Image (cartoon, rainbow, N blue to C red):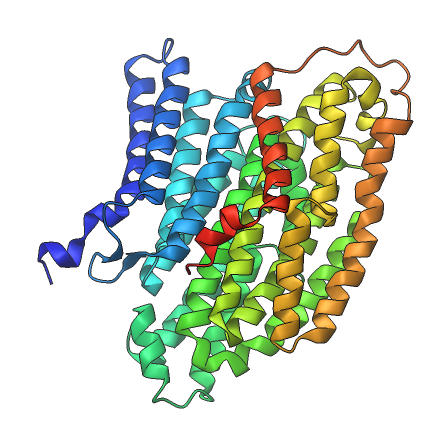
Length: 479
């Protein structure tokens, strides 16, 4: 089909605007290398804001490019999370980029291209589009992880991420090939339709589904495919770590839901047991590993592993009733905002203390900056799922969805491991409010105003969504 209705390019306007902004950043750098630093940020900001506007106010919806992409409620919610994180890092990460002397053109262009891949994955209507989206975002993140490759751990982080990510992509592609060989199509809607009349116990379908699941579980750092996350998060620049742990994870979870819940839903008996086992293992290993960490970034890495387990409960619930997908999408936004704030502010605090992202860097924070201490406290309480934060509401929906779907044991395990997580979150809060600053600490220098403003607004939003969850739930419930 080549008519305009089969193209429907207007529904892909957000992705095109972000990709165009990335190209313009490269062009601005080539034309005026010494005077384009400010232009990089403004081009990126304009591209993200315009893409966010057309995501929430689309000129067209439905399938595009002959069904290989689709702009629906799932794409709208996923793209909103991705663009919100990108906006947070653009407004709050400028001081970090300059202090670490990260090349601005390279960072901004790569982040925009990575976001383009994420949005393509979220809007995918075909297995080919799924793979292309994952590869675009992955290759961009491999490069971003190496932006500080001269520092200790930087090259190791980039290389480990590249090697393990490439291996996972091989699993994903092999699984897609098997599913295509069995169904005769790569279109997700066509796969779902064909499985209603085919034998879902066939080894080719089961093997393909499980191989694809392994590829996705790596991207969202689910145990036992999570070992790369702590090392990569620790060795990468904090602003890159914030991006890959929030926007990339949101895109991967949305892509996982789009592929497995509607398309491979008829074969759910083949992949649900593996997903349930991984969810249990992830919640246990993530939380108990975070208990013994002295590095703030590694603690957040293992915390992210644990939260991936909680989100898998939502996927399991959605496999029996797609309405539960709203709980996953609801939780992705506060989770992304929390981690974006914690990585940015944590890096800023560490620069004034040890420079090694240690938990001890937070000692005495309340005496030096009460506002930052309050901000950190709100975010950590939200991660722990303490009311009245959005983290509590998100976990409530996830666990109740799991109970409704019959996964009562996993829901109980999620609650118990959440109780365990309270210890290592409260540990940082206690350091900030009830300990003195480490001996020999330099005098406290106020943080960049833009960073404090944007992270403060994010923390306020966590409280607002905790009290009025329908502000975001009204969008996610349309899926």
